[in-house]
Length: 160
Figure 1 (spheres, rainbow, N blue to C red):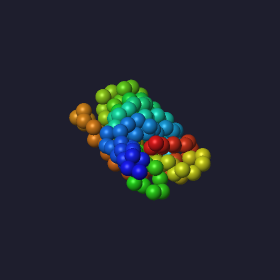
Figure 2: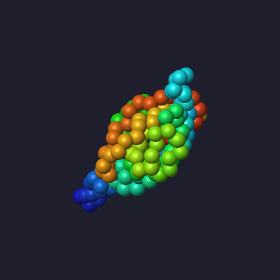
Figure 3: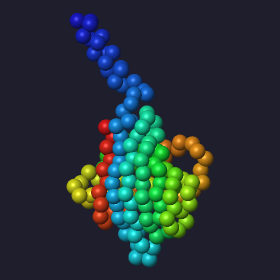
Figure 4: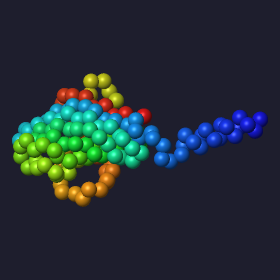
């Protein structure tokens, strides 16, 4: 009787051990259009981000067009919040690789927050361009915040 118990306990410890590669299966993809307001205008984005390690290191791309900037950025971080019970939320961070319009400049750090409501057709999904800044080359793994409800598109966030 001790052998099955020992094998089961070893398996549980191995599955729960820190440093497992569970983060490698996390991803966030989508397209979004939000109406920020009548004066400022709309923002549009399409993105894909996939974790590549055990932390929040990621790879992917975002193409963004908004009232103050337009650019393409390489995604370097993806943090999916495991706590939120009503939405799956994620924070995306990257570096602008192609500036198209506005205040965008190659090399600036950019951050986005997205949310997947889990409802069909993108109903209730959220997106927001948080901003661009000059930051040191360090992983921040920012916690995601609430965004603007999208008017068209669909966001999918998976943590397993």
